[in-house]
Image: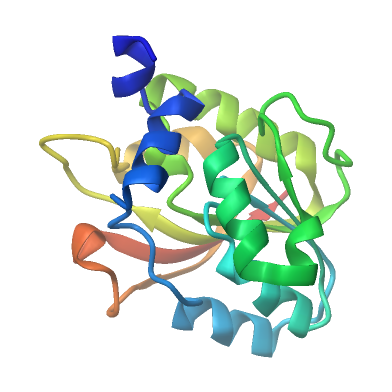
Length: 198
């Protein structure tokens, strides 16, 4: 492993090392309450979880009647997810979110949790463009968005102006509320948001 892949969060080796060593302060070992509430109040459809990591949410979406797919580019993370999910592990694929074929324009929901804030900001425009490709008109980008400042990223938090610039052209912010049960690494910075595709 070269020094770049060891320190660059846009490379799978960066995440392989953290999963292998158990350095996963973002891993809540469960499904966040805000998502549980969303699934209870929302008609099932077709959903995607990018940068899924341990992929606990796959089982929650599946149990709520959703057609669900998940992707991560870290082979170590995908192997962990498959072991945790058992038979549902087949719903998790190892691939590059930005390049892998993912049934473009077909998703009712893409679920965000710790993926955007794991990406260096130079990749944020690519993230927004990919969401435009994947989410159907009227569909939603939902989940946990990190706002504020970070002295030693990752994570890389947003500021409101950046979120508006990234998503404002193609999405409307239709739901926004604070998160009160964040993990320590995200405490006071997370918001549950729903961005509806224009």
